[in-house]
Image 1 (tube, rainbow, N blue to C red):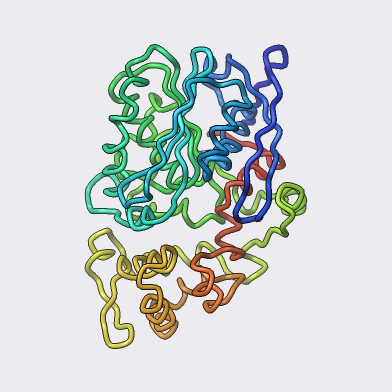
Image 2: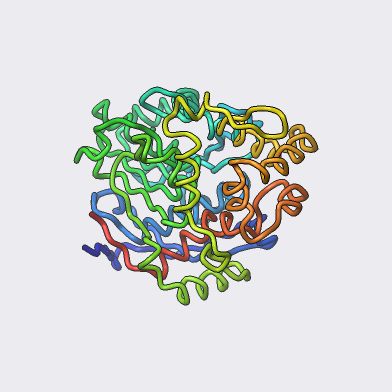
Length: 369
């Protein structure tokens, strides 16, 4: 079923401008806003595009403040911290009876929190972060305003948990639009109709959206809007992406890699959260678990113990972890990965990038269960 809601008589047009580090230039995105967005509980593509644009701007504190200001919001507050492991940065703004909470994706030491899955019902790292965010949101939760959470990647995971938690507590008027969110919980209640105001946009080729694995019982609260690989119109996607960013979109199939292979390898290495933390494999005369492996990746991303981490990652090319290292560096080589400290220009980066999701929203059919 394709759901598109158009409210031409109430829409106002704006531009959101921000500096994008991946493209190394300023990006300007046209958006539309309506004070009636949250009066309707059906998926609204204009609202989805607005949220995705705000998520793109949220990677810079001044950009997200300016974006909200340009869209006519007031009472704009930002809480951008020092990128410590159990923290998150967010911007809150109000317009009429709507409060928007935009949670930025991963930066700095937050990377380690992403891979701290834990062994209980809810992702340990995300749950700890949500608990740290709740005091900042107390006055907004108590208000009579409609409340929308949105975020990309880690920001999407936190938005999903915050919205679901408030809905479980009986708070009315709570919505979430998430993009590229990882899985967050093994709760059997994730598909309960009470979470119908939560929409999670995921792209099949984005490996982050498959972590932690569904094979471990993980999922997200609410509705999943899935851009399935076999349904993607890649010429349209590439054209839209290039027009937005000036870059050529690089999909996994052009590098002869697949997310399915990544998932299969991860499940073979760790068939459960317990094995993720405890089952080791020999790498250069020491045993590493899959959790240890991802912490090495985090060390490279954050430039913590960078030389030692780089040597360890190179050593994994001669171990059971080799398929994962090949997958993460698809489109670039491991030397580039070590020099850059991230997966920029890799297939994984293109698939996970926030503006990829905006390109998908602009060009692909939207199907909702």
